[in-house]
Length: 285
Image (tube, rainbow, N blue to C red; front, side, top):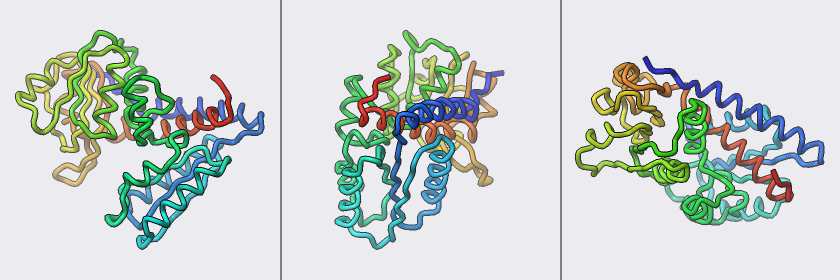
């Protein structure tokens, strides 16, 4: 039986660390500030934004929410981002995706000052991750790395397989594992002999958005299995990309859904905002 990687516990440890450092910054007259922009009434986005506000309060940040109507124009959104770029008390800017269809998310991301881009989606930050000289990491892959580190498993020299090639999770995930000297393979919807590849993984990260897709016959004995998926099964119950019950006896460590990767994402956003505040105030670690 695998050991369960408790994302709630690791997430709490990250937030405690951020809260402690924030207290130290406040003693120097600096309060990290995060601006969150949400356009329209998407229910899932509303929940995410509320959770981000709560997390800011928990760690001692200043936060502002900009809830814009569905009818907001590209020009209005762009103007708001430019204004936030200029405000010194705002260290991080986050635009909640997806945006309504008439708005161009790429245009908005490109307008955010890279040093305030706490989602690490700006091309400058993406390039920095590629060469391994970065200030921020995308929140979900960064959270996955924290979870792997929490197991004590050595990443260097291991074979890692990342299932999924999205810009938000799959590609940066592969880079982070590579930076820690894993041998990395990325699989996707066109990959031939998928099962033969996943079975070679000492570390398997599933981020494909297909409920319970990964079964025991796809997993190497003793592998570390990280499930980034957030899906619904045939009964409408929350589950991941990994068939947890089927796989848990095959691997050494596994993340549950919910309670695995999910709690880490917002905690890493808090870490990025803290980092941004330090950089903008010339405070070195």
